[in-house]
Amino acid sequence: MNTVLVTGAAGFIGMHCAQRLLAQGLAVVGIDNLNSYYDVALKDARLAQLQSHPHFRFVKLDVADRAGMAALFDEVRPQRVLHLAAQAGVRYSIDQPDDYTDSNLLGFGNILQGCRKHQVAHLVYASSSSVYGGNAKMPYAESDAVDHPISYYAATKKANELMAHTYSHLYGMPTTGLRFFTVYGPWGRPDMALFKFTKAILAGETIDVYGNGQLVRDFTFIDDIAEGILRVLDKPATPDASYDALQPNPGTSTAPYRIFNIGNSNPTVLMDYIAALESALGTTADKRMLPIQPGDMHSTSADTRALQAWVNFAPSTTVRDGVQRFVDWYRSFYRV
Image (cartoon, rainbow, N blue to C red; front, side, top):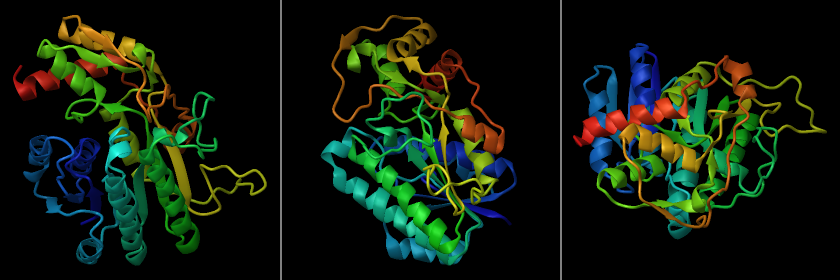
């Protein structure tokens, strides 16, 4: 059976993608180290959504474990790899950079080596909109230079793109990096704003609103993200015949290498996002306005024309609909 290796399978995006792959009749081997960065019970609950499927197998493993990853690749021999495992969080990377070095750099190196050894047909991996860092031009395009990250997390994601290009160039290995833009929705991460706001509002607590509510994000609903990822996974990267080395495009290459933004292309001011949440909850939040935090970007906005041209896909879920669907899930899951 055609097997896809999904790293970070107990994660937010990983669970949703694994579900869709299984629904397509594929076998999925999911790995995760189940670390305590946030509530492990939520990760276990996500895994429970997958483990009843006969073609899903879970392996508890850290991608930074070189011997363990090599042995897993030797055993599973996946046709394709969806690499979503990473130490997440911009703010956490300021205080705990070693975790990002281990997972995002060493771990990604192990993934590349496994894919190379077993001639994996396509590696799709998670990058991030945070790589745009200090860029001021909006919307962000893959052709833009991304040489000024403002968090260590962003730097590791930029490094992943460079590492992948090297393997694509040297070994002809198809790799595609996806720059995610603020993903939200059911089964989301507790460290993300929507989750924290919902929990606090329902508990009658004040919410901390950074950037005085004027931060702008290209909030992207999880179902749109998962659909885009699977379409990309089905279409391995190829060399760009129009690539011009005199005017290099960072998003393509003479190697089988691609980078795509995957966002909603509809940037939303944080206060409007909060208003959608208040509407879904039927209450008004008590807000504490605070300045922007170190490492945070003021605005993000995705130019997704390259992704649409590549796989004929563009996200369609509105923020209002997506927030309502998250609230419905949250109330059901936590029984509040």
